[in-house]
Image (cartoon, rainbow, N blue to C red; front, side, top):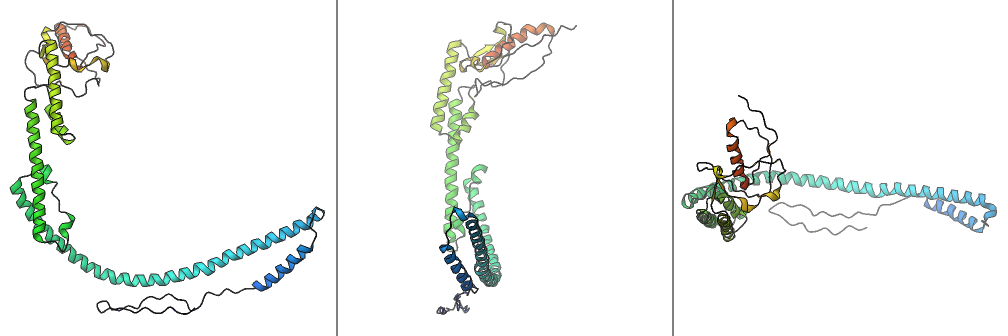
Length: 330
């Protein structure tokens, strides 16, 4: 096979490398006693074709079959062995030669890459230093809170070699402006929620503020209004917004199981025990209950007062089950 025509090598900044040409001078030769085996098998085939192979000479038929299988298996083995020599070895030789070339060029690249990486790192450090200065100055001006200030980022295009310094500065400031608007809007929404809840102390304000993460303020205000209407309905039904424990008639607490269906939103009200308390009994999970076992030790003449206390807690979904009564000790 004739060699491929060499490609013209071009000069790259004074460094010339010949073009790689892969062109074997001649194809791989395969030698062996193929002709001898072919002649033997030809004679064998002619002899067998003239024989009368029937059930009457079954032994001879089986002997010929066995011999033919043995020859075929031998040829298969030779073919597999030849493939490994003829294909894998040339491939391994080629890969080894190419690996040596790649190793040499990698050594050249690594030497230059180390220097260029250092230069690039110094360039990025200089950009970061300038950006840090701008960020401090913009923070003094826009006064972002911690959460919004953490969202300021040095974008990937800030490190483009062709980007002008003014564009970096302007884009960074625009981030501060956008985040300031976002912060102001959030604070305004918080003030609106607080204002909407201020005339109803039973509403959990913090819960609605947390909802700003997943809902818009208009929807939240609508939910607050519905809750206020619900509470007003309770007050109208009961005739008062408070329940004084001393005014509740004592009732024996039965050991029946407390089920979620027994607690409804309409039963929720404020409990006042003698003096105004600071405990907020409002719940976001009406109907879902937990159980705790406690031991009460009290003066023996205050049993009725305790029953009144427990009755006052019932409207808030808090129920007591008496398990055992201890004897009075004097």
